[in-house]
Image: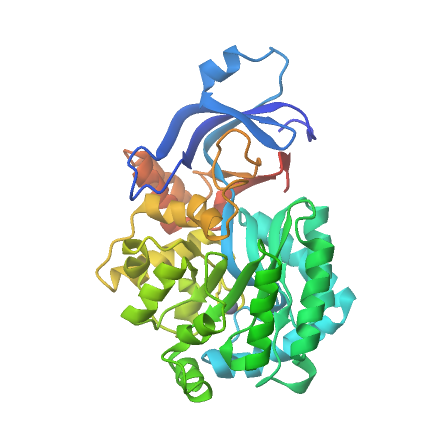
Length: 434
Ligand SMILES: [Zn+2]
């Protein structure tokens, strides 16, 4: 590798794969270049094409990075993750509500300390980078300083990140509660300070229906109306006991999703993590409101939540991305998430195709987060966040890849056998990030 090149025109050569559209609906969506070149200028994609064609149009002295035995793909996008749960990953033996009380809430209380929050945010973002994740939709804690700390660290790394302060005013330990008024005021301050600053964006983040009063849910909807390009990020129908408790707390509502819908929290800027226990009416509401889903299979298996029906989302054209849901999930790697997504769908007699899984972790995820103007593929003008995935990362991977006959097969093998070891390098905003 040559010395680090910053903000200079450069070309990356090797095997390149990205999607121009959803491969399920458009068979021409797959662009695969076995011997391709990606021209990057000042953090953006300038051109993509066959190596010989791209290089013939460039001066001889342009820096060329050769990536051999590797696949160059857009950076991965994690559509649901909690950075304050960095130290909660791999916590034993509970399902959602007990898991929150026993592990998560005590840890999140530590984020009142801005220094602690900065240290964890820094480690968390470095871990994302090592796993090839260049963008994420991220929960902070209830403390506004947790979000400030996160955005400062993301800004330093030039990452495209979305985060929000948890809004939570009931059914949690007293030291983690805000009030409807404070939660709106604090969120609004953070929006004004951080939303659209460089590559950062804000998501209004009520934790879930159980921990927000009606007044707080109304306040969250008010923020969405006032700031028409911030996202809404929350949990929906993750666990059976959670659903039963929501039904008890909101008896006048038809379903869990109906709570969010009636309070004005559904819509094309809303991302609902999990969405496991939905009925036909709920799916109709998801579709008609244009709401999006973050599917988190590693978490759903780890804390025993249930099996998400990806087929229901796909057949209704609902924007869907994948999420690690750290610390409910047990891996930062989108490869591991795809691996479990594949198995979760196998159990429901639905076969998740490798290109569909690739879509859910790149362009489809960018659409889910309404960032597809900026990221998700290598269309010229988009931001240069990409991974160099190593076909030879482990002996098993290397030998299995040698037996493949198509890019589809190679991709599937990477998805099933890969993890952070298969991410040789990650480039963010046109610069090497690790
Ligand atoms: Zn979560």
